Amino acid sequence: MRLSVTEHHVRLGPHAYRVLRVGGLRRALCYDNEHWLSLWVDRAAAAELAAAWLLASRSPRSLVHLPLRRRDERPLGAALPEPHRARDLLLLHHSLQFPASRWKEVRARAGRAGQAGSQHTVEFRRADFPLPADQGVPGAHHAEFRDRLGLSTAADTFVLSGSALPFADAAAAFFDLADTGPYQQGHVCAELHPGSGLLEPSMPLMHVEYRAEWEPVPQDG
Image (cartoon, rainbow, N blue to C red; front, side, top):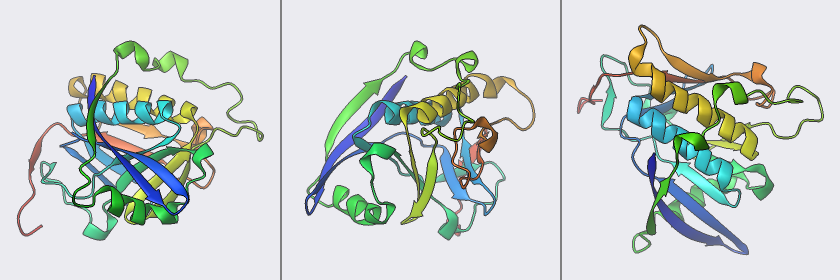
């Protein structure tokens, strides 16, 4: 599995940030449906989503940005969410203590003209992703467990902050969706569920739906 990444270095006053902007994800949409976090993905995007979350689990000093707000395609026959509810994703390790309110300025500086960033290709093997049987986390439901994934929203972006553990756990679920989605009938999805013990109590369910057929977004929206 190969993931295209553009690396940016941004300084805000005394703070320096490394931003890894993920390429690909051509057929992927992320939005807030007011009840949970929702994504639509095709097979390639599900695999790239998995790789991006695994990258976040292995990059505790980086901000991993998935630009998903502006899309040229949508699932066949799907009604797009209102534009103000489309979202990017930002994945980061909680040890960075990054304030979500700072993301808008960091993103603007990372995309500034003349700062193209350096291109990289990150490779993962199938063996790098945990198997479903490995996903159980002893102690996740104990009150003292500190590795849970938390959510903030800033600048049209879902900012997800946690330890390597929940990012890798989610990566396994998304990779399994890429593996099995094309061979199942009806509604096929992967979910990050509060019942796993790996999400903060305030974080809603995250629902990622596999959609095989996509079409261009009409010019009138």
